Length: 238
Image 1 (cartoon, helix red, strand yellow):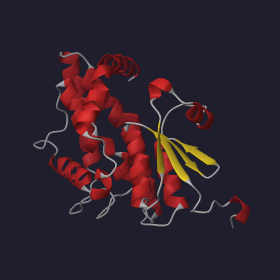
Image 2 (cartoon, rainbow, N blue to C red; image 1 turned 90 degrees about the vertical axis):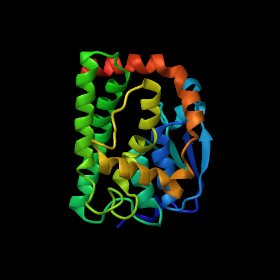
Image 3 (cartoon, rainbow, N blue to C red; image 1 turned 180 degrees about the vertical axis):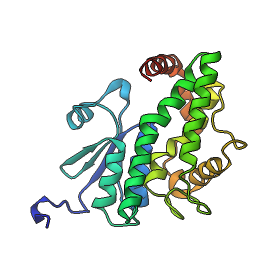
Image 4 (tube, one colour; image 1 turned 180 degrees about the horizontal axis):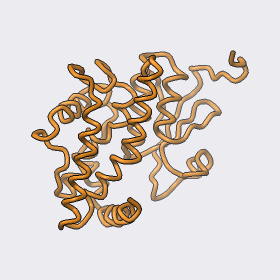
């Protein structure tokens, strides 16, 4: 049994350090799905605050969740913490096998899928880019296969952990595709995944913490050169 002294009352102040980021969105939507009021402390990565550096001295990245005197970094760790620390609809499945599978595919999204998408988006046009795009689409196919037949979300009839982990595919990938002039997720090839992306983006809880598309493009466009450099570095490690 957990010692009562280690427990954090739910009513303790909840703050989220973050800015325009698919990873910050994960934390925000988890808090909203659980019905947890929070304060968003905007922190631009180009000018990191002392608060961010104090609470995430290892990676120095957003998001960071502040719950009373506790600080929790890393988006998926935050989602799991929110799921366990607060009442509300569960985000992870109750079944141990299903819960392990959700965590596995969430790791797949971060460790494989987004790397494949990123290099395919920002590699210069040519034979190499064509091959990278084909590999990225194969990864999208693997993710799509995890959608339960006849259900709206990876989590079933309600948004769950894997939906949150993959939310960047629904909300941010279309913006990056527009900026790069590259289409990786198309309805004719990934009908079910495109339907999921539309369903996810249309959910009212999601819309409440989805940045304006015009603002996203204005914020991201100046970073195009940096995106191409990081894609080149990522490709060299793949």
